Length: 100
Picture 1: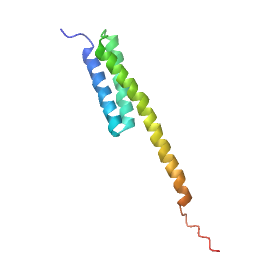
Picture 2: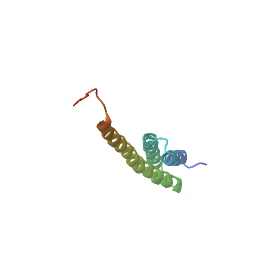
Picture 3: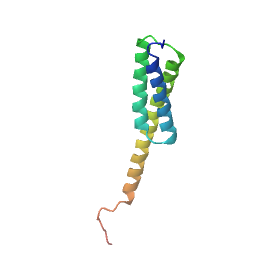
Picture 4: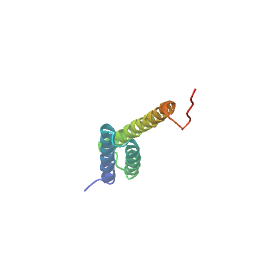
């Protein structure tokens, strides 16, 4: 007989793995954070169902890492875009031609 909550723990671990793969390949920090939050919710639900195995613990650790690193990468990307946009304002030509 399968332990109650083990399926949610496995789903949590799978979502943690997917979120870390997305971070490493660079396909989306925002999606990675979303998947990690869902995975953490599944791990919590698994614990409420009474499952405390190592699969749930592994899922929690990977999902916490996914949230933290995903937020850092997302904020860094936003900062880089902002800095690039600000630096390009120096070269922008708004039609103001000054002839001396």
